[in-house]
Length: 288
Image: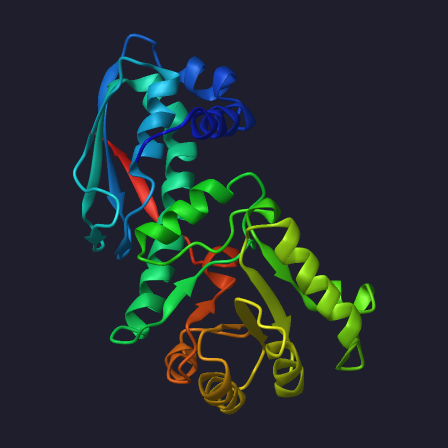
């Protein structure tokens, strides 16, 4: 993974947050002359992500630290597997331990969960997408972890694409009690096409809204919290009358129902929990 200046800055900020320049315990308890080796060990199974970030943590503290990864991002590992070897100044290894493991745990958690969803829909055309439900300032890393897990990134930020959601439609008067203001909505679509080259995605909450919105031929329609039965009806209707428009299922998707959602025939499934609430993977650092 290429570590941009922005990512290096995130690592630096994390080290500053942890007070790594003033590690009182380590400085007072450990001689600055001591050298040692540390092994990062997996305490449970998962899919690795963030190994280069972990290395950057130690290298920012001390450029002389040697870091050898035994596995690369995307590798499957099991409990007890050795992930990386760190050699050099013992103070540096102890000071950087928690920040390095925190990055590794979070990103491997995102990747591992993404991979589980991707495996559930294997054999279909479905693309598993993430959302903007990410930890503030860590989005670039979490979306990277999604890609490592073979998921697909939705828009990175508000400036990356057009998604007209229910709050846009309701607050601005384009939609009232499930009914579109046809004249205003037509003007909206025309304006969006004129002023931007982005694909236009519209969120709908019912089959009725879907059928109304389809008439204006957006590029993608997001089906928010549809039941599997309703998703299948939406796909059937769209394929019959508007086959070029893509459909995205969103809301309430989990590992138990994602296969059923995929069976509806939608093109994409966006899943907030991939980055919003992954179970972090436990790693430890053992000093030799």
